[in-house]
Length: 353
Image 1 (tube, rainbow, N blue to C red):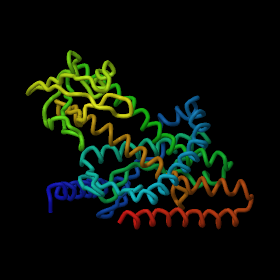
Image 2: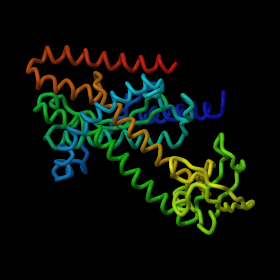
Image 3: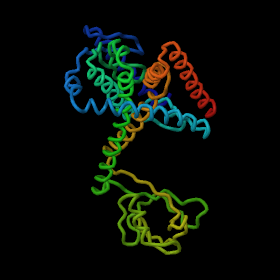
Image 4: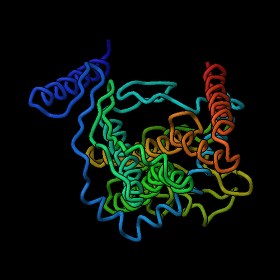
């Protein structure tokens, strides 16, 4: 058993113990060793205020088309995964490597909780906007996952079908918006890191089948007199040259003269580069932002799939009822579509394996 597996077991034990203690202190907790629910209450004051604002109207309007677009893209990605023989849906377990992807422990835990929280609060916002009640809200623990939930009243299935679809799609839209917001924050943070000198451009090695000298592990400081602070600076520096020109690379170790080759009409050095962040705290922040973006996209697109209890499944059922005006016919088609999508997911797993 490796260290990550030990951390994972300790974390699961700690979460299970926490929910057990909450139950012993008289909190509204349904406790099982690997699955527990803590119902905090049925009123979310700040959401009740926002539900009366213009923001909730915008969310309701944008949620419907965004959810169906996300549904289209989520199915497309599965089909693409089957064709390209790559995993489209990957189980995310903190600290574990799956399909060659290593999921960092702390970043994944935070990213899942934040993405789930935003998703559920968005559902709740439109539930309240439609003057419906929330039965309960709180947090849950499922194995290594800590998430948030909002449980609306059954009246949500009795209101206008279009409004139902908006409620189901609200979480999808919120996750996509969170991903976009994190990208913007990430770009601003990267800009800060570049200008504060916290990023180093490192030469990783040479591109195969090129004649350039094999340089590896050295920090690139200048291309001729052009100072290199980020990967984008390399492209800017090379804009002043043409294939066949000779440039000087200045690193923290030595100086190298390189003749530029031709890559589709553009000057090409034949070296691989990467960015490294000096500060450990900054590296953590960058990794956290990346995983919040990825997990939020995953939750948004995953929930858009037209499968049974998922948001996409619920909205597809409502849409079919609008189209056919017959609940029995709509339900049969809804089950058929759900089964087909599940079959595609299974095929994707089989193809990858």
